[in-house]
Length: 398
Ligand code: FAD
Ligand code: UDP
Image 1: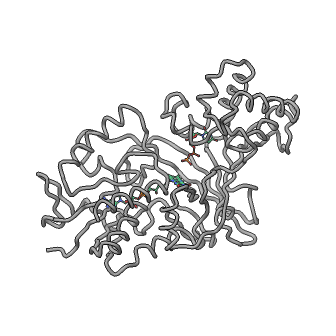
Image 2 (image 1 turned 120 degrees about the horizontal axis):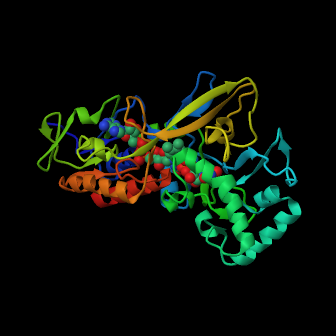
């Protein structure tokens, strides 16, 4: 007989926040099983061979408007104040326009999200200012507008701006990231990066933003460090779990308490209805013998190049390390389920949501089973949203 009250599969945000809450506020004995050799899920960071702190599963910047989430996580870390800024790097396709800011090697740059300063770089200072005023007049009560909304504006000059932004920011990047056009994907996805009706060049505008001062992994280690929590890494929970007839067995014995599962919903049920589609990423790391490679944490290649973006970790983490820097290029492709591939992004659309609903219905036949997290819920959630969901679920369980 196991003496654990709760079983949690996965030690990412969903699993770790839920574990700590139940262990601490509920005085429950919690067992966390994690397949990877480390905790922190996709937020995991570590030193690379050159001693640079990198994010192994893609660049993670913490931002939220949820005070409860920020306060909760702040118990386990101090924060480095950091405001993420991103620029687009693209070929200069109209030599007659003189961008407001610098250009090099036939390329030019502008802030993403596309904002009133981006307009000046794209159309030249004077024309950019005039068009910016036109946008402000067209949307007097808004601080931003989505690209899909902007494309519906029938004013010819605004339509021309919309075409420009669509072509130079969205269509090629979205094709690289999703293999589909902005119209074909969930509108909420491109809405994450709106057109800004101001000169605010921060990628996120949330009230709380930053990076865990010593990295994400130490924050998770502290969160999971509680006498009521046992973490086993390098363990595939599915090799020890059995779901049949409404009962969940762990190592052959019925597990009577709650089971919080944060892995893939389709995998939990042996892909019974077919696999849920995902996008995966290939990360190309490069360490260079120089202080910095680029001026921003992330540079998006919105028109050309096979990769979507290059991130330089030292900008994010604030690490001081003269003479060495590590950058990472991201290439997206369809997830095939092959060994070692990671399902990073759920592909949200009506068909896939319907397929997911079949798995969710199956899960509902197990009263103690809770699907929680970006994979288990098949959603495009940020870190703070997952932490909020873990707090909400544990509110219910407590
Ligand atoms: P995960 O972090 O995926 O954790 C799930 C864990 O479960 C994994 O560790 C997995 O190994 C484990 N697991 C699965 N199956 C099993 C099993 N059978 N047995 C044992 N363990 C199992 N969010 C932001 O807020 N800001 C960002 O800047 C940001 N950048 C991102 C960049 C990229 C490239 C990606 C892909 C995501 C980004 N996110 C960002 C989102 C963020 O990664 C997620 O919101 C967060 O990691 C979700 O936490 P989770 O616990 O649901 O899932
Ligand atoms: N996007 C784009 N060009 C950009 C940035 C984003 O077309 O320069 C679109 C693209 O479809 C992307 C989505 O907006 O997948 C969301 O971007 P975000 O940066 O939020 O993606 P994430 O960091 O989650 O990969």
